[in-house]
Length: 77
Image 1 (cartoon, helix red, strand yellow):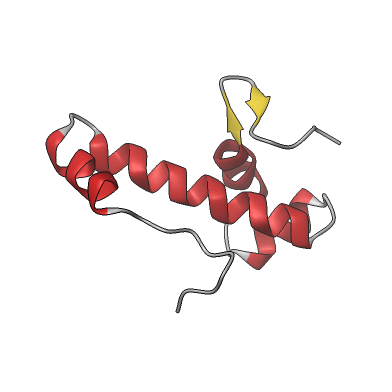
Image 2: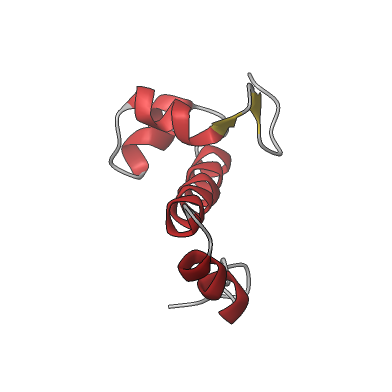
């Protein structure tokens, strides 16, 4: 299921998810953010379309891509 540009989880990522408080929660949030950002790119910045692509509400999508008040690796349109 991996392609050349797919997200890769390392053994260290999994160990941290097990060993750190909220580690799994943080790992899941990271993966969600990566998927949401990819959908945003594929939708050419249209957040409503991107949200539909990954079957989440527009408000959930917005929460997934925003972190500490700024969009990760993308500028807000």
